Amino acid sequence: MISHMSTPQLADATGTGLAGPENVIEVGALRQKYGDFEAVRGISFAVPRGEVFALLGTNGAGKTTTMEVLEGYTPATDGTVRVLGLDPIRQHRELRPRVGIMLQEGGFLGDLTVAETVDLWKGLSQDAGRPVTLSGSTELPGGFTLMGTRIRRVDRVTMGALELVGLEKKARVKVKQLSGGQKRRLDLALAVLSGPEVLFLDEPTTGMDPEARRTTWKVVEGLRDAGTTVLLTTHYLEEAERLADRLAIMHEGRIHTHGTVDEVVATSGDMITFRLPGTSWTFGDLPALDGVTPVLTYAGGGTEVGYTLTGSDTGTRAHAALRPLLAWADAHGETLGRLAVRRGTLEDVFMRIVGEV
Amino acid sequence: MKTDVLHAVRLARIDLTLVGRNTTVLFNVMLMPILIAALYSTFPVGETAGVSGEVFVLTGVPGLMLAFAVFINLVNAFTSRREELVLKRLRGGQPSAAAVMAGSGLSALVLFLFQVVLLGIWVYRFEGILPANVPMMVLAAALGVAVFGLIAAAFSGMTPNAEMAQITVLPVLLVMMVAAPVAFPADVLPGPLAVVTGLLPVTPIVEMMRTGFLGADHFTSGGEKLSMVGQWVAALPSIGILLVWIVIGGLLARWLFRWEPRHG
Image (cartoon, rainbow over all chains, first blue to last red; front, side, top):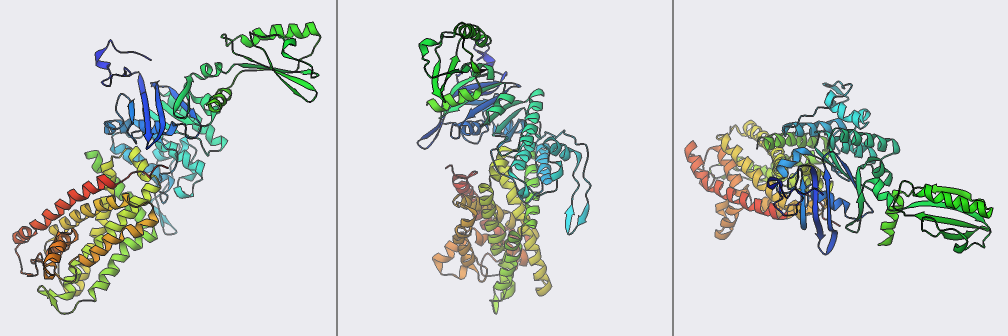
């Protein structure tokens, strides 16, 4: 965390020392209670400008609650939050035009068409002094009546928003007729329409097919490249690995680990696994690698051997461990069946956190 | 402020588009009040406050239209939009809370004024009477929409879902249908009842509308012809009552209105 204690104009009035223009999102010792239930139990993190930060966790981990406090929907029970240096509740009016929000679900006027929905959002954005600059490759003609329904023109700006998320063929479909995944895409289009400086995405790809998910990732990457700061929550570890510059894993209202994907994954250790014939092996027969003894499981007339390497040199520890292992195998005339070296994954870390508490 | 006005107008236009696409709402909001007017106008016989009973009733019917076009319409709209998370989404988008509320109020005002215009055409066509004081009628409509829009917001806060809205609106609807001085002037009621009726928000709206239509004093049962200035002076207590109700409605709405369904 960057300290600005020496620059008074940046000092945070709340005394948390979090303030600073570099951090677009700041959360300090946030607690959030609903009645007796404490959904968020004291979390702190900061997201610098232009970064994609992912909050990972199971359902009920407190991710959405954290988002809603940052979005200005709910006041914090305790602690401080700042978005672009502003209080999301008290300075909502200043903040609103600069922020894009993609909710977890719903909230559309079902009787409007997709294009009309985008038009409404576009108009609201223009009224607030943020004209939409997207431009599509085409426009749809209108101004005539077809079977009793007035067909309105869909302009290039609106088509641009729809093309961005792959909904251009659905321009004239009523929103209530869209599938769940299509509604998510429309939601994304609305969230990014006004070119927000900060984007909150709450489980953006839930319910999307793989193709739509990839489209969404491209949109988010494009926005990040353009300097947008993104806070996203997700269940999908693959999504966090692909998109997030940094991530935090939340469980039961607390952040259990955070850092870049590499930093977080490094804590999980590298795995070396192989199979030896026979079931008479014990630990004492096998070498310690990087100071680690193996775990043995006996199955199908053989012995499965697994080492989890947690040495500090994350880049080379697997390589360093293989050398003595292969030397041991040569010396004993054994063949290491199905030998595999696998880097720890985010899933390993995630499952450890979710499982251990 | 300017942004809020632009947003409110934009949201009101969308509201009206949606009313046009929803047959149930269209019936409740547009046809129902006209049917009520037709029904009420068959009751009276003889003369009331210097005009024929039928004219008296028709010029007071806007008070009942308000119940349907504004109150019930808005309780339904606020409740279903809260359940569908539309309100949450709008609040997270560009418009402010005030603009979202004003947008709904504005669309209700347009619907209500449209009905008053239809009623005016009816009164002219069959009774040969042209409205005497249109600004007073518009002011009555605007104040009425403000009061009942805020009360609708408060009631929607007490309404768990759109189906329940049919029930939660009943108390207000019944009071409006019984107490509004549509069929007879408020001051012919026995003492305390007349006072209570006079303080209800629907009464000043009915009386201002009728006075605006007929250019005569219908704040009492007298019905004497009044000058334009006289009409406005006579309307001052009614305007005062409505302003007080706007404050009460605003406080109730602030206390009870909710933007999101309850958690859990």
